[in-house]
Amino acid sequence: MTDESADADDRSLGDIAGSLESTLKADLGETLVGLASYEDGEYDVLYRDEAASSQYAASDIRAILEHIQLEAIGTAVYEEYHGESLHATVRVYDTLVTITVPVEETTGLVVVVRNDDTHDPYSIIETVENAV
Image (tube, rainbow, N blue to C red; front, side):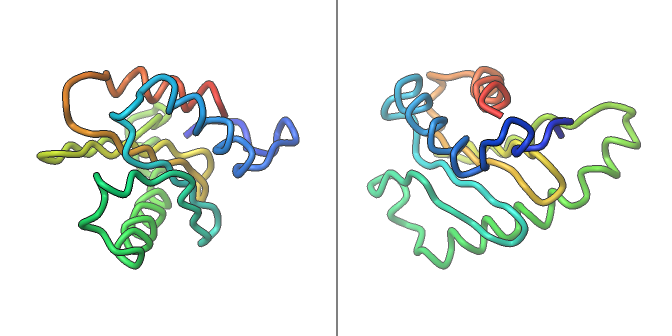
C-alpha cells in the first residue's frame, strides 16, 4: 500500500479517480474496460465499457468490489510477512485483467482492461500510483 493518504494533498479519492479516468482513457484507449474506487464500504464505478462488461449486472460488480475491499483488509499482513509494501494485485482472466491498487487499508482503485497484450500491467500500476 502507498504510505500517503488520498487526502494528503486535499484531494478526495473521487477527485483522484476522476482525473485518473481521463488519463487511463488517453493511455489505454479501447483496452480500458472499467475504473472503480472503494472507500470504507462505499464503491463508485467511474467508468464502465458496457460492451466489454455486459455479462456483469450492477449487483455482480458491487459484489466483486466488496470482495476486493475485503481482500485489501489483509494487505498489511502480507506486507509484514514480506517486509515490503504491496503495490498492487493483478488478476488475469481469459479476456480481462483486473488491477487493484490499495491506497489505504479500506481504500483503493480498481482498473479493468482487456487481456489483449497491448498494455503492460506495471505501467498501469505506475499510472495509478502517480495519480495518488
